[in-house]
Image 1: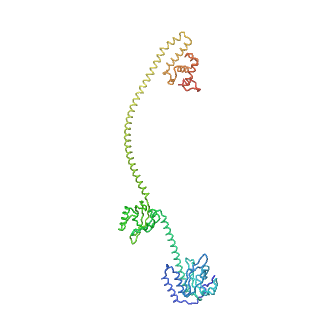
Image 2: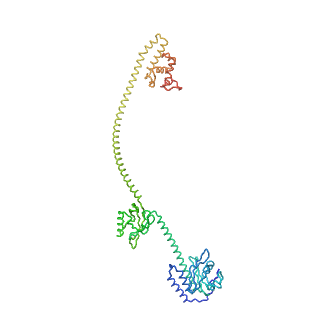
Image 3: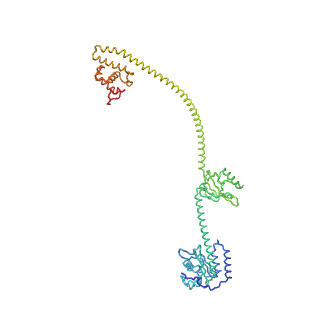
Length: 497
């Protein structure tokens, strides 16, 4: 560590008068007024001014490397006859007084008498005798140091320190300006790179044209893919060359309108001829470029919409077909509705007629019921007369026959005759039930005897048939009435029907 003195702790033996102060301030103000912050040699000019103003041999601006804790010399100037600093002095000195000790200025009146890593041989070789340093700060942070060296021991007064602080502040302004400019340039470069990337990766064809010279100024890759031309080919062509005759006419009309100051649409559809001769439809979105209030060019974003246009046209055809079908269907429905109305009217009329006929039929049915009731009453009266007649006409003769000498078998036959006669006379339905239509005559006789409770032997004797024959008739009767293999009494069943 190089030991330096604090100027505040030492009394300045040199006098400072108003005249010297005015001269230095005047020179500094003149220098500041003519200073160009954007000039690349700004720091160099400050070092030259410092050598001249302070009458020293060497001036340096060192940049503090915070990581390595090293002061790296950024710029250096020495008067034509000044000493040339050795590399050991350029490398890393005078760092701690500002960073570690926080001093506002560091002074060494005689480097030969200072303690530090630099030996007296280095100072003797470089002919350095005195040193004045001032920190350079941006936003309160020390970024470097402004240093001057002289070839003889000397005392730096208040004006020297004041001048160094002003020049250090000016260097800080330059460094801040450079940082801002670097940041802006970096952002601009990033923005330009991003814009270029977006331009080239865009799925839309993008290009810039000069409307005065009628030529392409820039095209992206999608424009080349869409037209089939390379970038070099397109940059030698005119936009007019890519258009069909119909689109050329529209393009000329737009150019004439723009030249006359008339407003034109920023969206337009044009037909483009590709390199292989195909015709593609493009939707062009145009942003005009102006100079002196005149349109000089345009940035254009083009979407090639041939497939979409074909799809729209096909959709239009389908729409027309659908409209035709709808019209035909509507007409058919109108005809059908008219037919339905006619049918409804006919059915309403028929319903009216049916209702009238129904009323007539109802009246006829009423009359028929009256007639049927009358006929039924007459029929019952006739049956009653017949039953009474049969009873009066047949019973006397049966009584006479019963009183005559009859054999036992004849008496049985007579009983059967009386039973049948009583049944006929006592019932309004002497005939067998309609369910007996499938029976044979002998089976009908057996059914009647079963209903009367006669046994098989009795039926055999009355019908003059064998017992086996009677059994066969009984089995046949059960089978025809679906009583086979069922535990149902035949007499009970026959009496129920």
